[in-house]
Each structure stands twice: as structure tokens, then as C-alpha cells.
Length: 268
Image 1 (spheres, rainbow, N blue to C red):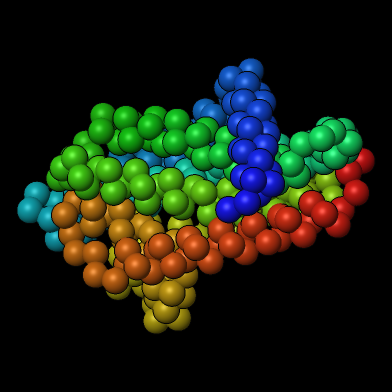
Image 2: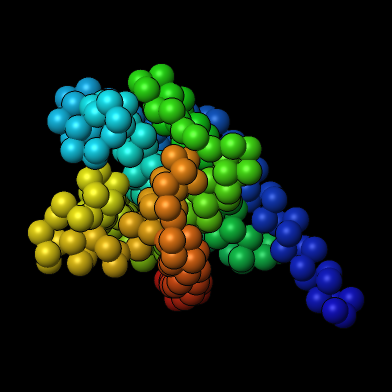
């Protein structure tokens, strides 16, 4: 690597750290955004475990049947749902920067353009991980009992970071593509619905044929199945490979879309 390339890389990393600090300070100033990441999944977790858990858990074929088995089954899906829910906040934040003129100011400054988007993505991942900690804590309080050891928990953290990284790039792209903050809040909504149409709430085997096909081949199902296997000791099969592949495709598509939108769309 040449000296100029090393200097450019060092400058980009330094600018990215600056943008990351900006986004983290924004998260500290408005903690409600972090709480929102966990809010909806926690409400749904409590609702499904305590209202539907007895019936749905009995259908899972556990030893005791009921809420305990369903809490174990449901929690991995809730973690993915929390990451998908965070995408909405990320898209809104990016759209606000675009429409309030902050991006235009950054463009006039001597900073790496990639650092602006990278700061949003890494900041979103950090904020999401904090929200996931709240979801796991509540799940443990209501009966979630994972069988994972230290290595499995480390793998779970890696999968969650990877999923969050991929969806953060996609949500940044959505925020840049939206023409208004309201539009940015609506674009990520399909991401929130996908865990419901996958293996997050019930086994795909229990679904009608057409819906089962969609559930088995959509991206969130292998992510949820991988987390469930790591946490509960159930079989993972090829789900881990599929999950990593989906994350790579989503991250790459989101990055290319975000970069194209950032270069093409004038900031207001």
C-alpha cells in the first residue's frame, strides 16, 4: 500500500470516528431512540409469552409444555425483530440530516464522504446492541433459559452484530432515498413484518404450503434459526451459512444503494 493510500485510509478512519462520536452523542442526548429499539419487541415478548405462550408452547412438544418452551422458542425471533425495528430509527435520523442541511455542510468540509455514512451505520449498530441487551434481560426474567455456553454466546453476539450491520446499511440507504422524514419512517416497515412471516413466532412446518415456502426462503428465517440453535442447542444445519450469505448480500446492496443516493441526491 502506497503512502498516499495509507494517508487516505487513516484520514477516512479518523473522520469516521468523528462521525461515530457525533451519532453516539445524539443517542445519549435522546435515549428514547435506544429505548424504542427494545420497546416494541419487549411488549410483544410479554404479550405472546403470557397471553399465547401456554397454547403455543404446548404445541412445540416440550417436556413440560407451555410458556417456558415458548419463551425459549420466541426470544431469538424477538432479537431479530428488535434489529429490524431499529432500522426505522436509523432511516429517520439519516433523512433528518439530509433535510436539515447538515449533510450539505459536511460536503463543504474537508472530510471523507464515506465517513458520514459509516458513522451512521456503526452508531446504529452500537445503539441496537444496547437495545438488545434490554430484550435479553426481560426474556430471562420471564422464563427464557438458554443452554448456550460462552462460545455460543460469543457466536450469538457475532450473528446479531452482523445482522444489525447489514440492516443498518439498508436503513441508511432508505433514509437517503426518502424525500421526507415521514417517507423514511415508512420505508423500513416491511422489515418489521418479515419476522412475523418467518420462523420467529411459530415453526414454519405449521404454516400453509404457500406461506411456508415464503417463510423458509426469506432472509430472516435462517438468521432466527441460527440464533435459536446457538441459544437452545437445537440443530442449525445450513442456516448459519444462509444467514451469513443473506447478511453479506443485504449489506452490499445497502452500501451500494446508500453510496449512489448520497452522491446523486442534493442535500437541502
